Length: 282
Picture (cartoon, rainbow, N blue to C red):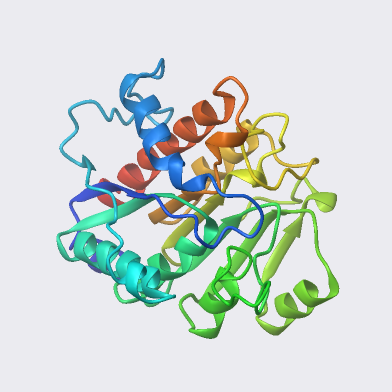
């Protein structure tokens, strides 16, 4: 199998923090998320066991690496793309798949630029309240409202599947049609049949895809979303190797009693278990 030969290069999973929210279109705050999530994982009430039976405690396949440093991003308007892409490429070159913690959703584009160099036939599963397909938003083509327009323009995936969408305008609908996006809106939930994948999967998880009743700590609260359990089930039910993921748009400034921090840490843990099980031990 082609995916097995691709995965033979990888032995570990790196937790990569991306403390960046310069492209937030509404409120800053997601840059604080990586530190908060990592603190819950390391010092909170969650233990290190995942529901799939993977224990992250003292697991040599699980590495917490240094956060992305923004050097080019300080000197050029779009240098953040270079910094994030190079950080991800360094991990991939070292044999580490990446589970990345944003940050706003603009970080997904450079992450996927790196991934496309190792996985040319990639499926993206995108969980979000928003499609993030704007050609440009408020004059910024790299806004957190635009990453998947850039991804599709660059041909960084073979298939883009979006779940949880519940706010669209005419431009976003036109963009989805232009790029042949498979979109599953919340008004049509639950799905008639489980999703199925034929190529390696990268999951981009925007925390606002979850209903704000479960995860209020986001900049763009959009009621009517997925439950925490439904997202966990979506992760567990991926029927192809899950080779990478990002968790984005958690805004600690908007959280209530640490609820969203717990949700984000739980989802991070379950993503780690799924990646290790399906791609490193698969």
